[in-house]
Length: 507
Image (cartoon, rainbow, N blue to C red; front, top):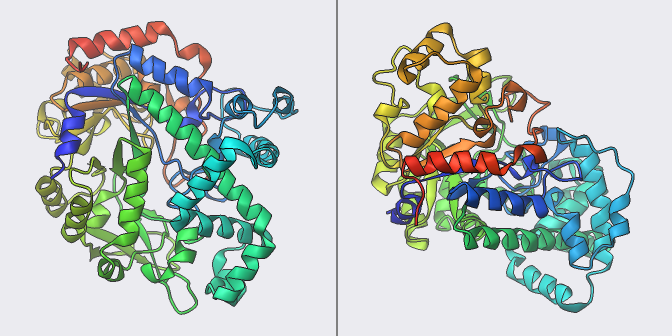
């Protein structure tokens, strides 16, 4: 059923780099000039894909993780480009001269967020008239199903000092119509600002996506499987989640012990009431997918196995060990998805504990999965499904992802002596951390897998200092940034030569 995904992938390659990791003068990567330069870099290097992490709003309370957000539909104002606001006449050059201590090589979310917030408030005042104002009105009308609730949720969260919505006054917690109407009137200005911020991001993003598409580059987006409790989605649609009579979750999401953690991962996200979702024809999920298909050319469903069976942990547990598997609606749900979106361009994140029933669902719907080379060189190398010689055509092969160390960091700090020896024997030469990264990139490129996606850190053979995320650690993640000096024509040309020799340049 996923013929479109297979047709899009072909034999090709791309780079994994989140927006936060782009160079910029404002403390965090954004949708400004450097995002366009990176698209040019991809085109010069012969790459077909730019894969990113979720674009959802982030929060310092959750370590700035893009997988924890207050909305499944909204986008992150932190990525709005001040330079493009100047180009569009919503800011002046002098507005960008504020005295903020931006760090060089890492993201400082607090400083960058404070700066962007100050600029966006200025820009908001200047959009009320003209074509941009009319475009804002059209955006609001086209996104009325989610943007009004999201903006009011944000305004109410601010009013109540960021208390979770379950602790708001009961009439607002339970969405009494009179209370909502009164709140919208009293909070008109902050609500309007939030809608403006969403419009500006959308406008800048769609321009960047078009620029990429015009150069033959397709964007792979990332859709987190779960949403956070303290989100506009839970507040707006509590009936879709397993909540008690006080609107609190009595179970939470996670995964059992696996490669990443001996005690599993206790995410704590609310669990879907799939029976209620089914009664509506999965309307909320289909709306979410429709939004993602507009924003991206392909969509990776994170934690895909949660559709087949999910790990449910009672609230109050300190780890994920005492959870249990519950059946998900995979086949019925995906049938609804493909009825609504024939040939939906989906990728299944099928890492971790994967059982035959997950594989069977993926095969039935033709969904490509993921293979990580960092997992390939254990004692079972000859039969390991991630080993290059065992890969299948309908998959995406990665050296690693945002949750792994860089290839160089893995080889230097995590790989056992036996793993290092196996990789060296596989390559036919003795490897060091830098040469190991290059060799893993080469193995991915030469494999039979339809698509090879390489984290930018591995293209540059960077070490553990460039790691993006360490699962189950609360701080210091999602901060790595590319420097201007690293994005050179020489790097692009070397990557293009490898891409050509292994037949991954299309057209």
